[in-house]
Image 1 (cartoon, rainbow, N blue to C red):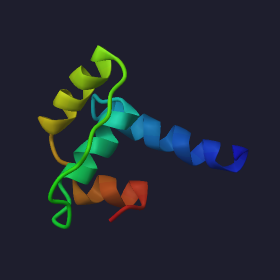
Image 2: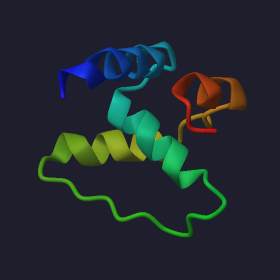
Image 3: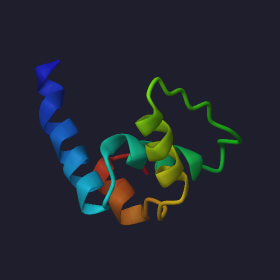
Length: 72
């Protein structure tokens, strides 16, 4: 598990540079995929709903960022 920490940290830093938390960046990316027609979002706290709404309205993950994340 710990071998994944450097990659997770790098992804988190990319999210912060975008003005997001990691979860918001992930939701932003998922919702912009052409193959995704809907996404189920689950929240156990009100702040999670606020973060999700912010992700929906965020600037899409551009190809350069997707390459950095290795998700293109």
